[in-house]
Length: 177
Image 1 (cartoon, rainbow, N blue to C red):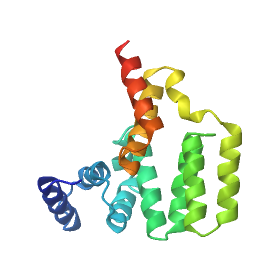
Image 2: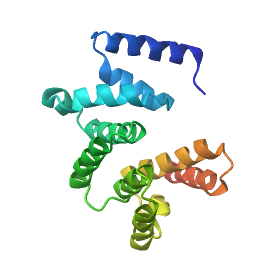
Image 3: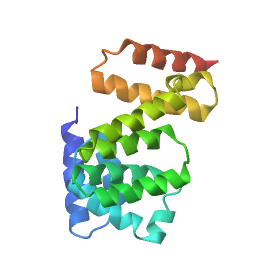
Image 4: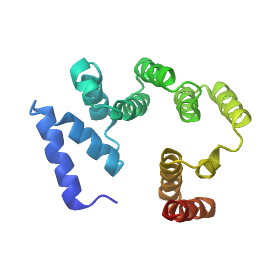
């Protein structure tokens, strides 16, 4: 749930960005943090950063997070070409990524291509049936990725997914070792 102060901050930043006062990246980060659906604004301001080489390169590794955020916003706004372009950039950077494969499936779903999306998901399951246990591989990056997936599952299910609760508990224990 978004607190009143965070909502007010998001409104202020949105107004500032809309009026040319800068802060687009900060606004996009806040929208992502609060899980707000401001797809039209995310698409507009995200693309302005992605299309500006200097601004884009200053993001470092966060550039890929922005491509993903813009891809989802583009799907929401039915700007399928933009979403496809963002996914293509991500696929080039992370070839064979299951996460990117899932986003490709979501794009097909948003276009109403249910059969094609089902094929993508089936292929992903065939290629990596044990993907959900990333934490067992070890390494800080894998732990963080697994934690992110479990946390989003917990958020989406309101804490009713036992496997996600167990997974996040295991990650906490493993990180302490």
